[in-house]
Length: 186
Image 1 (cartoon, rainbow, N blue to C red):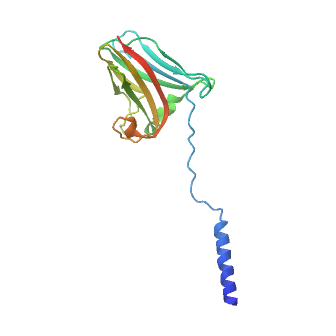
Image 2: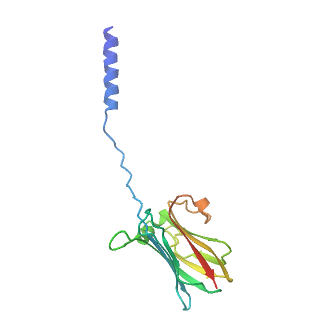
Image 3: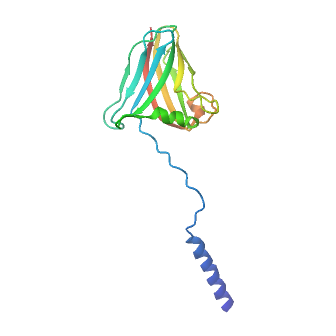
């Protein structure tokens, strides 16, 4: 009987020690909080000169009651080639925080996707890449085809699968931003 009592005391003490152990040898994962994105500006500068086109969506109250203000400064010229640059800002801060810098610094964790719809005749090609040679997309080339009107959507994905086949479905990840513009090639 004495052996059983001693044995049960030892087992109980061992369980108590294990359950109460506060020792954690693992390093906690760094927290990378999502940035607030209020503004996306896409600048399309024609090669060889001409009128620069600006696409912009601005939502200064974030998830507030006001809808984003979306603007397109003009029509694309049929047959023209444009150099595109994407700027992403957080304008809830003063001065505005340039989120594009963070996207480019963390290029292996981000990718812009360009989706063309509604009969719009344009073609896009990535202009910058991450350290492994996979598309990043804050810079690109857009070639305007025949006269047409349709949707041009810019989607920023966080932690997409890389490499991917260039589609959102294959890339996965989380959408940080998606903005659609009605664009005309005239």
